[in-house]
Amino acid sequence: MTGGPAPLTRPRRLVPGDRVAVVAPSGPIPEERLLAGLDVLRGWGLDPVVGAHVLERHPRFPYLAGGDADRAHDLQAAWCDPSVAAVICARGGYGAQRMVDLLDWDALRAASPKAFVGYSDITALHEAFATRLRVATLHGQMAAAAVFLDDKDSQEHLRATLFEPESVQTLGLPGARGLVPGRARGITLGGCVSLLAADLGTPYARASAAGGLLMIEDTGEEPYRLDRILTQLLRSGWLEGVAGVGLGSWEGCGPYEAVRDVLLDRLGPLGVPIVEELGFGHGTPALTVPFGVPAVLDAASATLTLEVPALV
Image 1 (spheres, helix red, strand yellow):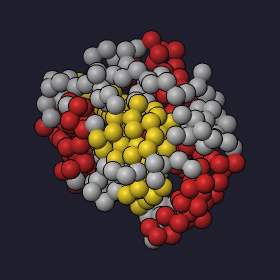
Image 2: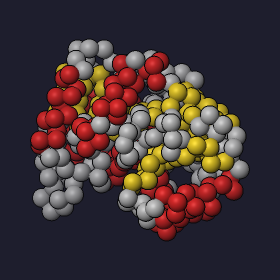
Image 3: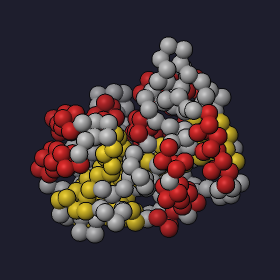
């Protein structure tokens, strides 16, 4: 099974009173940031519940939020709980790849689809949900992420996507620009570009980005490492047939002029529309981008326009 160009199943939108689960598939969570994030969710009229192992730390590897099996258990329990309307990751970091194959995908497939939110390391799970469940997901702010807690615009964009998705079907910040001209239609996919490259060759990995509008961003990757990541995606053939590319933020990746040079050098020869600084990822503000829905990327207006709301 592959996450090909067909639109994925969109979960339902949220309404006040909905129960949402917060899980930690990757890195450890400072308790004070988790509590602050839960307060934001309660302020939206939601009833947040926390996975049993969210505040744990791996006994040997402090960069992990508890053991691999425990992190997988929390995610699976939340997804398979019929009383939960959405699953929101607490933060990224590292660790999703270590637990993704420990999930019971048959059990997850049997459960009703629900909104799934996260970014950064959660890219590995966005890809898995696309290829194994055929469910659309949200590349958006996480409950204990610093940007979510500190930036009201990022908070509001996620809230609107969850509750009023028709109101946020055109994405792009005022500073967005066309890097390569053109207009393309496709199915959205993407995330942290380093995680997309790391997914190559793994079980159930997406065969290619053909027919897709690839939305990519990253953090802490110097220009030469971004060059290596993009070159790997090119050499593997994964980018063949991609319809267009939307570029988000590149926090901590060096001077943006140097980053842009690499992006244009590696991606420009694809001959497809490219829009830069669309406003998603690790930067501020950070827009929520649905993955698995049909959209149009327009370099002239520097926008990504969803053809359907992110949630039904």
